[in-house]
Length: 227
Figure (cartoon, helix red, strand yellow):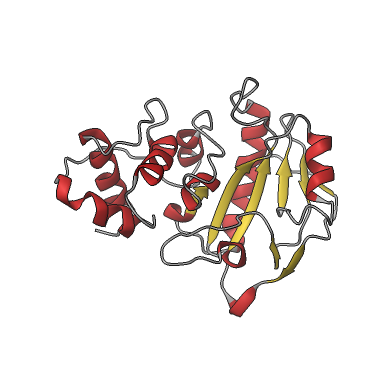
């Protein structure tokens, strides 16, 4: 693996991790802005009260904004697996991308390659389970939709980062809500289903718990050792 050069652009927007919480989540975002420069300025502006630990540009350039031992301000109101202070338990990565709208686009190979290298380093330092590698939409469904259906979660999982369903398992419709909560979502309402589909069935995001969605979820619950 080639060496990953990381540029420093310190942000003042961070604080101590609360309650001695362990870092056990990795949250991926998109910047939703027109350029890397604009995103960096916002992430480092005290008035914005937002930040992330890292930002990855479309050309693969990586900036470190907040030290990993500090609580960056990236997840906002969110929930996963019984936890609501996601910022205290996570590393946040922003990917430069305009976000949903007319200019939303796939994430380039250079950006994905740099992200993989960055994530491998993070996973070597923190005990983050595969089903705790998440998008912002997963932990804030309805409120957020990044990194969106154009992000290549399958590629990331193939690199050993996160989960991807290998073999969907037919599931009882009555078990779906329990499986959603078991996997980590707060509920099985349409916003959460849509977030799940954006991540694990990005070609068909309906917000409906159809048979294929239920089968994908059951497979993931089994793969994560949660069954």
